[in-house]
Amino acid sequence: MPAKSKVQRRLMSMAKYAPEKVNRKNKDVLGMTGKQLSDFASTPEKGLPKKKGKK
Image 1 (cartoon, one colour):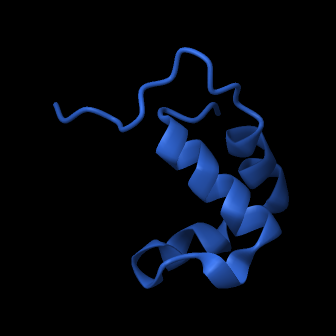
Image 2 (cartoon, rainbow, N blue to C red):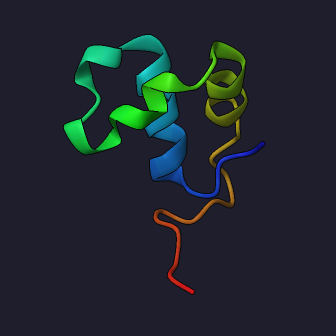
C-alpha cells in the first residue's frame, strides 16, 4: 500500500529504521510488520502532497 503523503512516508520510514524517535501519539505504527513499513516507506515522494487533505 503506498503512502498518501510525504509526512506519512517519512513516519513509516522512521518507524522502520529509528523506532525510538516515533512520537507517543504515533506508537501504533510500531505494531506494523516490517514488510508493511517497507511498502509505505518505499513510495516515491514525487507528486505526493505534503499532508493528507481532510475530506
